[in-house]
Image (tube, rainbow, N blue to C red; front, side, top):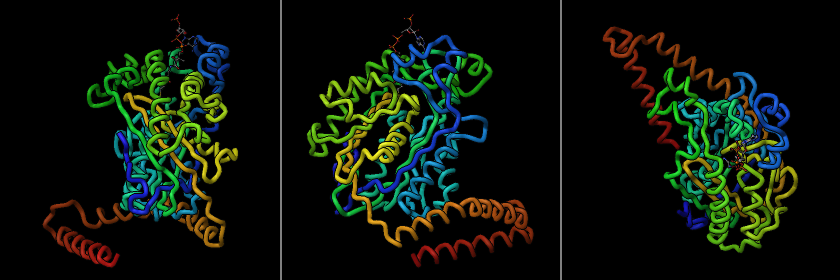
Length: 410
Ligand code: COA
């Protein structure tokens, strides 16, 4: 499926203007893992390319805290005050809760007071799915600025006694800002795919509505991810090159024109196989799986942020993002890296306003919660016909009128 073949149809393109990432401080090396499960550094490196991964420590580090830090950095790079965001999308397989969405928590944490927010579940392909939704919203004119985050704490759903899976995954978050621009650049084509017949190959069996949490699901380890590694490997090596090729064609490019491929970081052997099938030298693939393991939806935006930091992306470069994951799903995006805007006093001012907006977000959230408590305390329970009930009706009517008047003025 092409998510948006209409890139630029309204004279609007969707450019990546900000980026950021965050991983927990705690590093878990292969040697440390070998002391808790029957594995070796040699096995992990030779089969996956992974040397270490970052994992959250304690309850204070969560998917939302990592996501908020990545999102904040992306806003600061873009110099975008959070109140100007129209939409927040968080791709994650390890949301903070089933609901509310992690995206709503981020919207509140960053002070994105005018933004809609939703979570997206497409496994490790989730970030590219989010990027595709964001660019379609921007190109259609329904949004000017969208924050897309991929964030995971896979260590929370990993069975640390299962050597088949626990050596593979890590925690982290990465984010981008997608903004409208009039020059031809940014996300030019995307490709999204799914084959639900392989849903059982990578699955978190319990905790959903089909098998709600119970003593039995807990004692059977149903809340840990389960994977058929060989089947997923076969699937990945087939769809990665296919998706990369297809999205390149949709953008009107040749694969030889592509300056950098940022693949989902699951296993270096999968990346090497894709490079071989595409006939693209491996040094044009960005690889950091050795230091982070597979961070699922976070892996591509973390890699993108590192690629920028290492000076591997220049204005005009043709970039392909490609991923695969639970679902089964796959996704690709063709991105022409945009011109960095010249730094002006206005840019510094906007960066300052972005920082201020984020700083004030905590106070805004606290004020909203306090206002709700005070209101309910004064007005009493809904439906009471005494003086408090009548006061509640009057205040509600006054609020509605004010809101409508403000909306009319916009
Ligand atoms: N340490 C030591 N031995 C291990 C091990 C570990 N951590 N994990 C598995 N093994 C053993 C297996 O038990 C098996 O032993 P057996 O032959 O006696 O049964 C042996 O190693 C080989 O297993 P195999 O499955 O053939 O290894 P592999 O070369 O296919 O590599 C994966 C396994 C998981 C690394 C590989 O299949 C893979 O990367 N799959 C894709 C996973 C993925 O990307 N998932 C995320 C999708 S987003």
